Image (cartoon, rainbow, N blue to C red; front, side):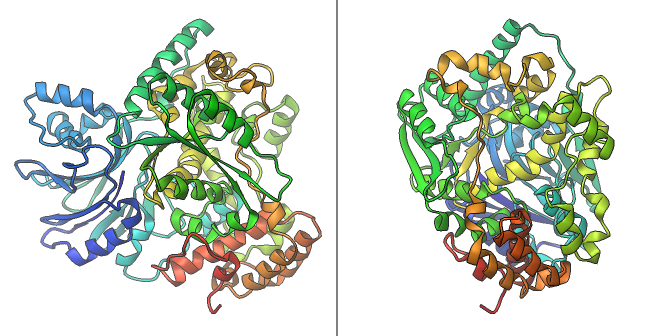
Amino acid sequence: MCGIAGLMLREGRRPEPDALARMAAALAHRGPDDRGIHCSGPVGLAQTRLSIIGLATGHQPMVSGDGRLALAANGEVYNYVELNAALREHGRRLLTDSDSETILHAYAVHGLDFLTELRGMYAFALHDARTGRLILARDRLGIKPLFYARLPDRIAFASEIKALLPILPGQPRVNPAALRQFLQNQFASGEETIFEGIRRVPPGEALIIDRGLRIGHRRYWSALDVQPRTLSPEAALAELDGLLDAVMREHMRSDVPFGLFLSGGVDSAVLAALLHAHGAGRIKSFSVGYRGTAMAHELDEAARVAAHFGLEHRPLELELGEIFARIPHTVWAADELMRDYANLPTSILAQTAAHDLKVVFSGEGGDEVLAGYRRYRPSPPERWLKGRLHPGSGAFRTRGHWSGYWTRRLLGPALRAVKEADRAPFVRAWQATPKHWSDLQRRQYTDLVTALPDNLLVKTDRMLMGFGLEGRVPFLDHRIVELGLALPDRLKIRGHQGKWLLQRWAEPKLPPGHLQRPKRGFHVPVGDWLTGEVAARAGERLRLSRGVREWFRVEAIPGLVAARRAGRGGSRELFGMMQFAIWHRLFIERPGLKPSPDEDPLEWIASGS
């Protein structure tokens, strides 16, 4: 697990080592163990390393023996053991114990078809000096991030946007459509980001950049290729059991100890069962709850699961002030604007776990892949009404998170002008699905290409890597994703129960009664904190924010604060504007500024405090 960055310039020009060093410095948190820079012709690569596999021999950027290929990689290729055996049969001589070297040799043997050979979570840059091409590739589900920017004389890329900002020719500019998507959807989705001119490499895709800086796109995997299957419950259970066994064996490959984030829900409990069955032993586990709030938590359930499997468990019971002091650091860590409140406790869990570990397992993806969310099983009247009011996406993801009342009063002219951006990612995803798919499969797919890579996995990657911690997410192995999409609806949802097949598989393996608990989700008591004087102070600071004054109607803020203090909603709107103001200060006004993990968030809303 690492941070990567680099430059490809027009022929005849050479990358500046100082620029690469600045980019690498911005990624130091992702790779505290090692750092390297490599330049060859018009290409420069940089990497900061978190050593997990091949501790002594995995220095990067990695260069092939003949000097033709150079690689900077982030993530893990979990099937490197099997691939290396096959590569040796092709006469390849591997010189390190690193899974990253496998990428170099797989490309040397298979050419551009090598991407289908890799199983794992990864984003990498591979330079082929003989052909002059640079390959920027991202794993199938988008577990690992990769961004790029096309500049007049070069293409720059990095694991995080903050590493691109030091080499931009001017001040970064806000993309209004992406900002509006953040406000209404909690995240912006697609290839464009909140920064104009900075784009995401799409999941399951490689960019092939030639000497003239022309960019070709090569999609090597798409969930759209999954064909529905007719399976009996027994056959599906057997297939799921075999996949979970194979995936966990690969994901447990590590030269350092690992732990588990244990929420008390089904997915993390399943991971605890799998780790136990595969001989992980008394590993460390971590869970989080809250003091001083009426919101229910799952500390007791998590402790029960930990005791059942003999884990060394650490529950964290957090005060409200402790949680919300994380806001500035989580905004900095995420790069992209995304409002997932779970960023806050996840950041605290990550910092705690990183004191002892470099790797933790987490249950992300189980709900998307095996259909656990309530939104996947709407009632017929709900589906009919939403479909009539908001056509285009099968009555799925139809409503913005901001109320219409505050949307009309708070958004400035530039944001009101891009209203069509709100639902565009969801409509686009829905319309791309095959006609023979069911509505449930379409809902799963829509989340798999929008909310999963651009929200949930941003949290999983950035909150953890903010403290040099790798997160492993076995439910997002592409083989499990393909099975989950292909399953008949009746094996995913029965009555009011989602994830039916996974729950049937898990029942004999988990503590008695665990599956009968109601699903709570990873909630955060925002409403208990953002009220009273905190809301009033937030409103005062927002009116001073340069970004808020540019994009919002500040004269409406006192009304929003009054509504919030009176308990008439407004928490999402107020919280979203706070996040934007802090983000604007960190990335537009003062790029390079970095908050500590414990700050007064209200003081970070505007400068001059």
